[in-house]
Image (cartoon, rainbow, N blue to C red):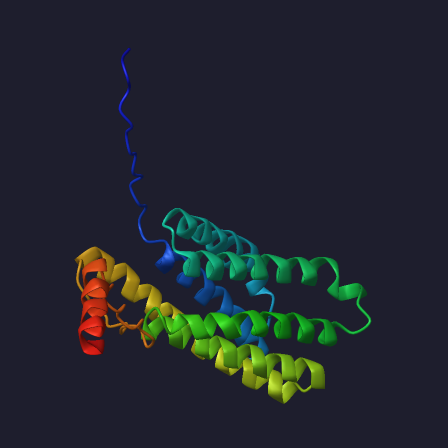
Length: 221
C-alpha cells in the first residue's frame, strides 16, 4: 500500500503592510487634526478619507498583518481602520441627532485612549519610531477627550496641534518602512525595541540533576 509522505507547505509572506497602514493613519489624522486646530476653512475634507484611506486601506493593512503573523500590527491597524470608519459613520448618521455630540466624541476618544494605553506599553517591544507614534497618539486622544468633555475650544485646538505632530511621526515611520524595505538596510533610523526579553536560562538536563544528587549523597557520607 502506497503511503503519501506528509508535506509541509509554507506560505510565502506578503510585503510589509505597515508603511501603508501608517501612511493611511497619518494622512487622515492630519486632516482631522488640522480641522480641530482651526487651521482649515472647510473642515470636512477628512471625512471621505476616513472611509477610503484611514478606514479601508488601514483595515486591509491590518488583515495583511494577520497574514504575516504580526499580532501587534494586525490589532493596531485593524482597530484604527475601524475607528476611522466608525467615526465617519457617527458624523454622518448620528452626530446631527445627538443631544450632546461633544460628550459622544469625548467617550469615543476615551475608549480608544484606553485601547491605545496598552498598545503603547506593548509598542516598547517594537521600535522607537513605533513607540513614538503611539505616545503622541496617546497624548492626542487624552487632550481631545478632555477638551470634548469640557466643551473647551482651546483644549480641542491644542489636541489638534498634538494630532498634527502624531501624523508627522507616523509619516516618518511609514517613509522609513518604505525606503528601508526597498534598500534592504536601515536608510532612515527607527531604533530598536525599548523592552527586550531576558535571555532564557539554559535548561538543566538529567545529567546535571543526577550529578547534583550524587554530590549531595557524597556530602552526607
